[in-house]
Length: 129
Image 1 (cartoon, rainbow, N blue to C red):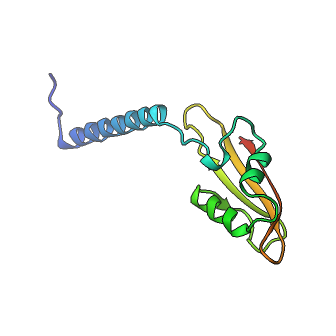
Image 2 (tube, rainbow, N blue to C red):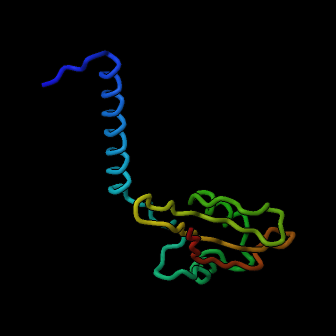
């Protein structure tokens, strides 16, 4: 066993050991971390959610009900809610080790001046780098 020749080399060894430990913990967490499931609102096997959405929020129903449910499910607005076409999106974060793509669930809708839905659609999109 060699005893470090100075407190400086002991400190350097300690810092390197801590960095290696930190990286090992980060990699282990990234590999074993479960990915969040898609929003329950869009539960279904396909990437086209228009039918699912329109069954739950029929054309003519209050826009406020849709908006409330989207925000409750973790969607974020991509447009102003006063825009002609409104868009909300939920992103599944990429798996840091295996994914190079971000999967997004997107809902698009329009509403009339009375706050009633006039169009509603949704789908899954991927953005890859």
